[in-house]
Length: 499
Image (tube, rainbow, N blue to C red; front, side, top):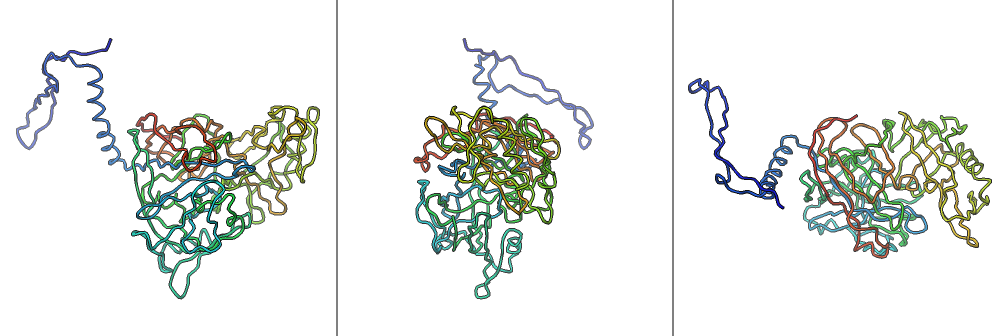
């Protein structure tokens, strides 16, 4: 039985106002019902009328609070180095807009895509995605960045920025940790964004941004097996897209990702803070070019390893501990690597066979799952610990006579004093980069589930939306047609403060 209501007679709303400019007497205002007297009105009709008001109320509230919108990006790829070894998304640039597939990289700052005149750049991709080349001359909104442009000076924070005396054009050169590199010039053009607003709807927004147009690439960037159109740097410097969009009020000064580790991968990437009750936070080390954290110790099976904490420190001679989604595996400073591996080996010595394979410590296991391996804890400043399951530090290599070979996925970095936490560790957990609050947070999570996202920086007003993926992880052979996207399943508008 459907519920209904019988509307009654007129409603008198009495409002006392001081009409000082008119008569000085109280005034009674008459408020009439919108439905006829004694008319039967179904609950659904009342709810429908209310629903028409909600967007207007929300729109007015947004205009008053000028809260930036959540921006979402589709995610594809996987951490698995034997399949893809990277996560990537797509961006729309230029007028008319064209789509480009770019690797998600928190270890660099600038967004760049291959340019029409790119020399030696791959023309096809083993990821089964179309390779496209950006052409400034084909976009009606494109303009080159001159040497005198203030934005050119921002490029010096993120790259070897320079100027050509012949054409007054702002150029750049990047060198990445794996030895690959790119060079080109800066251009300004439109980026088109899928935004999520609090009434659970998606809308399109655009903004003018500066990004790189790559004319030369070297190293692994030239290989077609994992080729993409460019790299999407999510760093903190001035030419970072995060910095550019937040300074324009288009998006929050925070972003979050949740990378799926199983199956075909994929995940969630949003500009905004994913909110999860189990989140823990640790402060960012200020004035660093990367996302440096203060790692204090490593525990295996609850036992803290005997490693001098200064081995993880960020200093003039040591690179410190860095969060980097552009790195596939994870790397430990050499002083920490051996104690780490030895502790794991000791804990499973009675149940597995220890072997060496291509310089890596491996284990022959009769089970297809590594549950017998210990839990590892990375302990950071502020009391935040990152708990690693065996599959967060092990890689399955092959099978031998029905047994499975698992190898330590962490690698040793010699002589640089750097610890890098890449996708091997970052997968299957929410990671929040709160630039306004200068902190990073995380929580273990099923990244195929929906998430709550806030548009606010630390403290102040918040708009919460509920976002998640549609569909299920698809085959990598179908990556072009089935890129995972984020959709809204519910909404709520709240005002909250959180530390």
